[in-house]
Image 1: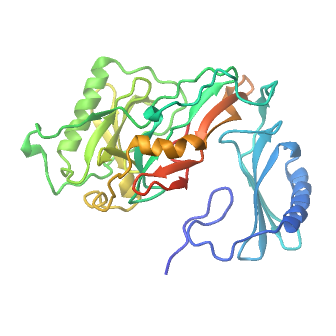
Image 2: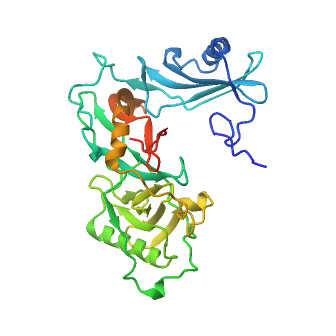
Image 3: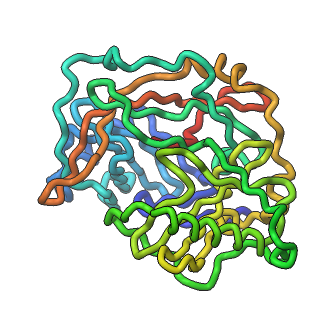
Length: 363
């Protein structure tokens, strides 16, 4: 029997089989939306009802109604903004209201509708990237056009390449005594450093050398991969080596299959900046309960090339306005700036050429 997962922290809905969830009709949605506005005004009077963006309205399998909202301002969505979930009895009585809604100040909306002329759409397949994404499929490869972010004038904002270029890790030159087929990658004893919002000092050359040496030593002591290869992300604005709070360096090592990165199968290593000592390791496959030595065997090879995928994707790219939280003021209130995001709702199945609605890479 399939078991349902843990409930979402906001909605309370469990992942997995959906049970008897049913989408409400237009008339039902309007009825319960009216009641929801009354409950929200009573429970959260700080929320402007004009900023509520309806996402879905469903009947749960326990005879309750769930309405979900996102946030928008002047008709423009807040990118990765808060969610609001309200559960009601069939009679309309409030059961629960959950949200991470907070105060926010928004820039003025654009003077004219439509993106600035300075934003030029891609002209060729050079923007196409290939990848596997375990959140979408454990077998299929995909091609996509990563989203690009622009300010309100049309100037592109640096975001860093997330799907290359790659620096292959060659473990063949390592001492055989350090490599053990019986030593799978696992979480080390020790505590993974907690997130720290303070900006860390950039890594110097010696710190990078120590971090690289520690990560290579760890890979050499682990089982040698057969169906995939290890690689570092080697971009100028974004790389596998990142300074973290608490005096640590985080190194994200990617598994590549058929030359494509596998998102959802990365290895994160945490190294002390001063000593170069490996403090902890976390393998995404461990949390997915997937065996690293077998997971890549069933992955299909890409059939299409990037140019063929581009022919299918080019008509799906759009440029839309969003508000994006860029920081907070002295009072801790979020500041949202108007941005333009070039994106596509679709990715291309590299084995069949079919378009699939999915979001694999975010800004």
